[in-house]
Structure formats: structure tokens, C-alpha cells
Length: 114
Length: 111
Image (cartoon, rainbow over the protein chains, first blue to last red):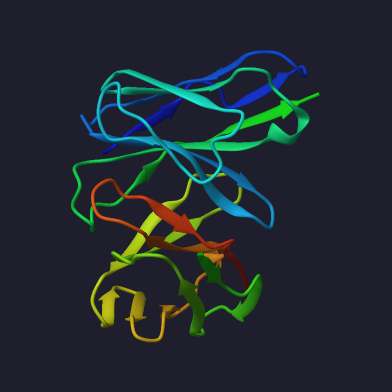
């Protein structure tokens, strides 16, 4: 089975702190994604990466950055956390570029910024 | 611009059939996905349509009409465990699966 693991399930951080959300997949997938999910807004794409050291902005990249130094690991960074970044963050991975290849999600990281 | 519309909530009875509709307008279209998400859990893949027509997979079927920008997910023989949110998502471009999601439909199955 494909496994996408997010390092922290629940985090509480203070405004202005730097936050790292780590994601690891064990299936040698090329593509990895970070989404956030908020009530009434659905899943929104923050950043994605289709290769090591490659990254592309999604729909809401402001306030975030990412790092992909190794194929299996994709990190989301909040340089200076703000309360409007309180959300559930979902990492996902996908093999190759075929249209029908499904995306596999991790279990999510619930971040609260106080 | 891009937009996906789904009903926010639906209720159906155990054993019945329910149809969840999804309409979309996106810049570029390369397929439509349906995901199921139980509360507090990750979304899991249900179906993928890229051509017009019906795709059947057990109790679940998904339909696509590209000319109408319309899809539906059909759930038959509903079970209590089918209570979940159902997310419609459109793939916007070739290459990496750049999915744009709707806000989801929360389905409650009652006895």
C-alpha cells in the first residue's frame, strides 16, 4: 500500500513562529503536493513539486514556502505563522504524469496558530 | 476563472440510492476525480473520468458530460459507513496532477 506520512498530526504554534510540516512518501512518487482544507472552502492547493528541487505555486502560495531536497520528502514551511494559517494541511503524492494516476493523501496535520 | 459547485449537504436512507452532482467551469480540463473523506481522515480515491459516460465500480458509479461541465457520483445500496464528505475535483492541466477541488458534499446516511 502507498503510504504518505505527515510528521505531526496536531500542532499549536504562536504567531510569528517558523513552522515546518514534513511529509514523506514511500512509493518513489515523482509528484508531491501540499493542500490546506478549511470549512466551506474545500481543499486548496498551496504548492506542488514534480521532481527533486522543483516546485510550482498552487492557488494560495502566499505566506508559505516548500522544500524538496529528496524525492520522498516534501516540506511545507510557514516563515512567520499567522492566525489565518490555522487549518488542516494535507500532503499528497502521485506517481508519474498520466492524467488518471490517482493522488494519495496523508492523514493531515491540524495546525492552530495562537 | 474556475469554479466547482456541489450541494453542501445531503441525507439519504440506508439501502437507498443517492446521486451527488458536480458542475464545473475551469480553464483547461484533463479529467474529473471523486474522493471520499470521512471526518478527521484523509480523502481516498473513488473514481476518475476523462471521457463522457458512466464508469461503474461496485456500488459506486461516476458519470461525466464534458460539454455540459457536469458530473455525478451515484451510490447504490447505501450503507451507514457511506456517511462521509464526497469531493469533486477537476484536473486542470497535463503533467503533474494539478487538482482543483470543490467544497465537498457531506452525505449523512440514516437508518
